Each structure stands twice: as C-alpha cells, then as structure tokens.
Length: 359
Image 1: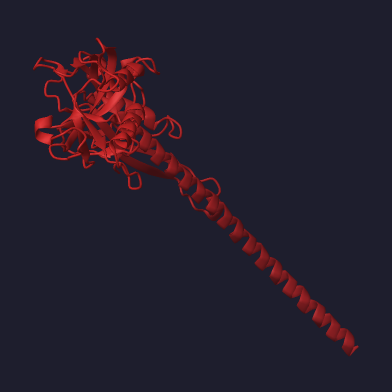
Image 2: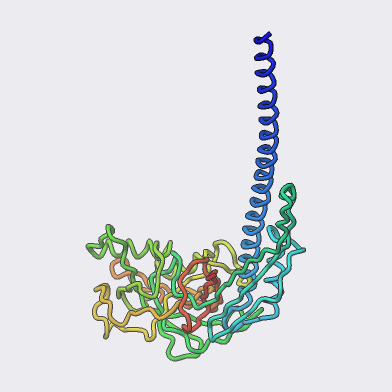
C-alpha cells in the first residue's frame, strides 16, 4: 500500500513538472519567434536605408552634371537630381524635396535629400510598431580638374585666355589652330614638347631611349595620372616632326568623331597640361636636356581634333623629317573626368572638371 502511495506521488510530481516545462517552452517559443520577426524588420530597415543612400548619391551626381562652370543650369540640375533619386533603387513614392544648389565661382555643390516611410510586418507579434520615415542625403561637388587620368600626350601649351564657349550648352569653344608659329594670330597657338618623368624603375639613360619612350607616350599617352604637381621635363620647342604630326592625323580615323558625344578615352580628345607662359629654347637650353624650370603645370584642357593638314614634308633621313607648315584644327571642350579625380577649388576653368561625392 505504501509503495502505491509513493508511486502515485512520484507520477503526480512528474506531471506537474512536465506541465511547467510545457509552459516555459511555449513562452520561450513566443519570445524567440518575436525576436526572429524583429530581426526581419531590422533587416528591411537596413536595406531601405542603403537603397535611399544609393538613390541620393545617384541623384546628386546626375544633378551635378548641370552645374559645369560657365554652363550652370540650376533648374535642370534640380529636375535631373529629383528624377534620378526616384529611380531604382529609389522609388517613385519616395519624397525628394528640391535639392539645395550653391554656386561659388567655378565650384558648385548640390545636396539631395530623399526619404521613405516603411511599415513593419512581423514585429507586431511583440506589439512593436517600427513604422517610421527614413532619410538619406548626399552632396556632390563640381570643381575645376586638378589632375588628368592616364593618356596625356607629351607636350604642353600656354593657358588660353580667350575661350568663347559655344555650341549645345556651351560645351566647346570656337575653332583653334595649333601650329609651329602662330605669329600672334587670334585663336592660334603653339606647344612645347615635354616629358613626364617615368615611375621609379624605368630609367632613361640615352637619347634613343628618350625618343623611343617619347614615341610610346605620343601614341598611348602618359601611362600615369598627371596632377598639378607632376614635374614636366623640357624636350624642345614645336618642330612638326613627322612622327608627331602623323600621330595626330591617325587619331582622326579612330573611334568617335562626334564632338557632342566626346568623352575621356576618345582618340580625338587630347588632354593637355597648361603652362602660364610657354618656355623657349633660349630659356631652357639645348633640346632634350630635361631641365625643369618654367614648366609648372597650372591647369588642364581638353582639345578635340577636327582636322590635320600636313603640308610639305622637309628634311632628310639623317636630320629627320618635318612638316614645317602643318596645322591642327580643333576646339577646346568641356570634359567630365572620371569620378574621384582631384579638383582645385576656386581654380581657373579651362573646360576640364570633376564631379565628386563629398558627403
């Protein structure tokens, strides 16, 4: 009898424990499900914030393209910024107030703000309503280019002082003529041959090596980016050498020929360093002596080739062949450089500019 009573009490105790365990397990499951649901909502919020930031970034960059120095179109900048801020991953339903545009000389900024209200889906299991409005902001700056991507030809010109911007949206200048002796004519200019000192590990030890490397740069452009601090080295005044002039002419048959579609990388578009004044042999000494005085870069310009007239060929195999009367016709052009290039706040504008996200 006593054994029966003890067995009964034992079973009753186990039954009570199982019941308590079931209750605890049920409560734990509710908590775990609630936390899992909350994490889903948090993930959705994180995704939304990332989408809004990307949308704000692309809106700011799109609007900035209308703030080019000398061609600022604030109304179009606002319209493009708002349109791109609501493109994927933005949404048409996102709220994008008019961007804030600031123009200070040759530097402009545009700030784009976008917001979206999102509901929660699962967190209501815990009576939590995370419905909220999330906002993202981005600012893009348009500034005078302070560097060039790889591709600069091995010569420099004097900074132009008489550019008259014209064409659609004032995107290019009047026609200019590049030649050996401009004789002070308006819209004519000459150049000097220079070299961009190569990176460490590429020594230049004799004239033939210099010239071979010069022809490589003439054909393919400088292999390194060129900045305002890049040192130029003197080669010679303009000579019209056969190799150089024919290289210009060859560019006319390669790729895009429409100036209205010009972009960095087009064969016809030459990105050229600018000097305050053009040095001469009298100042720099003998050709190819690689001196550096009077060769400080002050800016950059894009020159679009329209035609090359060779003229008669003179010289000999031993002295070299030259097109003494060649003429290169073209226009300076406004060019957007690849994102991330250096800018010169307040610098003088010669057509090359860079657009950067700064916030």
